[in-house]
Image 1 (cartoon, rainbow, N blue to C red):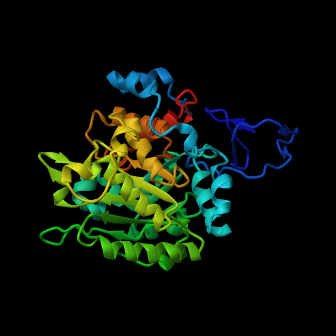
Image 2 (cartoon, helix red, strand yellow):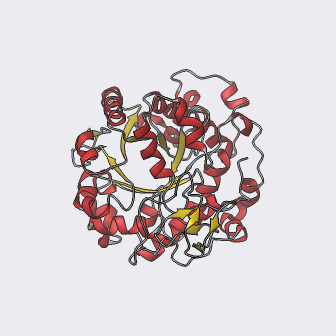
Image 3 (tube, rainbow, N blue to C red):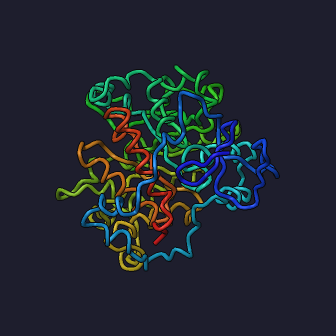
Length: 408
């Protein structure tokens, strides 16, 4: 056995263990007793070094990256929805939550494969690389900044070098290299997309393949997007609910991109598609159709229901359950994921260049302190040289590995 930079152990066979007491290592480096589970999807190999000889970013460096927001984010105490009322991420999260659900043993095993892979294995947190933007935003817009990612294999290599829990992408990307990599890193196949060539563009997600196709590819999970609030959202909800039910039948986990899309969500120069109250309700609909992980944008404002004068809400949402602090706004998103029974991961957003590292670390701190389960960050990672993308993914993971950054 030898230690990783974050104090976990890697066996000679490439099996990754968290820090534990009670292990006895014999002279021939075999552990006894055998642990109840191991945190690796595949053995290490000479091409992909899980830790890349990198030390974890210090709290001081994280604080520096947070800049003027450091005190507001690191020392905030949530007095809205108390942390004792939500289910916390942790190494026993799957065992504590999912055995009581209707999910099969196969689903729980595949969900565990995501939570127990990569650098965050066994922590209850996830770092996922999503690359479906070639369809959603066009290949040129997505990959022109770094053309190497037109090649699907480089997407997978980035996820592996970045020590991610999983890689989420299209049928085409994952299918192009599935026999080489599906057993080396968990695959999440994105079922539907907004194809972005229809003119004028519309807010619609259409299926690009079947759940069975994803299963045959070796995927551990399927993902899908619903554009809540769009004219087509009713059909999308039905389609995705049926697809998730079939995925669960086949033993795969489900991840829902819970996005709001409607030109009417913009009023007086404010975009309420990222409002805490509206995105919270989108999350609530997402867990209703039995998503196992919810992907949502970090809330940037609140009061969407009142500003747009539609739907139903309650004044306590704004006076007691939220404040202007971004951690409290994100906590409301967590609450709408059945008080954290279903993990909330926030999206990393577009690449803005020089500020990407600070922005990613800030989002990670907010998500972690709110009770979320991690980040799913794509463009900030792949729209730059691979080395820089790997460093950004590791910086995100460092936030979740930093024990002094706790749930607010």
